[in-house]
Length: 377
Image (cartoon, rainbow, N blue to C red; front, side, top):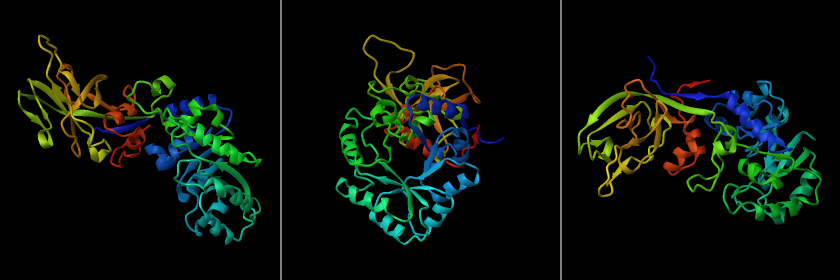
């Protein structure tokens, strides 16, 4: 029998989340499917998202793969081309390219084909990652408008704080001032801006994480909306099973380093999932804190740990995550045993909640799923 772990991909959830994005805007939708569609599989995600107006990714060979699979939408290379050798493929397969630095324009100057390329000129409006500084945009724009290799230009930028309370106002002001003189298409909004700031929608929006059913907003404070509150449905559910059950005596420890020590007799389960599957090794261990004087609870008071579902019932991880296994608390779940189903994240347990517990973001967990985990749809 195969090892019981698997990633279940709900393609109908992808379609649902795209429809939710569509209802939120009148702009064209550029579905971001980089990093293998955030770990969900490039082609299967593209097929489920086929109603999108375009796709955005990084690798020219993946873009070619999409074209050869029959996708005719706009396909945008988010970091553009890297060498002159990329340009013939870009032209042949009609790919749109982000232009973010002078060395790319120098490559264009040596490209012999006239009027073949769609370019997206990236403006650094404040993120200070890729893009031309505001003082340079006018000169670059004029050069591209008259460039023999360029047939179409879109102006774009990317927000650094759309998912936080500080928002997008400063960057939006910079971008709008730069874009005002030009009658070209514009693209600004990521998932967070699409959902929160209608003024950023312009001509193209670029949703990413929301398509996969996770909230783009930081979790943990209680002030930011969850995926469920936003109406999003999780696409990936990481599922496994209990492969061993054991009883612990008071004082016994669990796992490498003995991070968890039982303060009372308890029952634990070992799950077929570890960091070699993509589960975060740094996910916190459960910890028992003393109960208040005169109280008695069947479960520990003030425990911490990373949440997990066993047969749909919420519990916690215990001890350090191993390469292939992790342990969970079954003390309050008497009906569970070897073979009981375990949800690590997904349906019923938002991936952003696991990410928050582990001090990371949902993007990282989804993208970190390893190739040894079977994927089923």
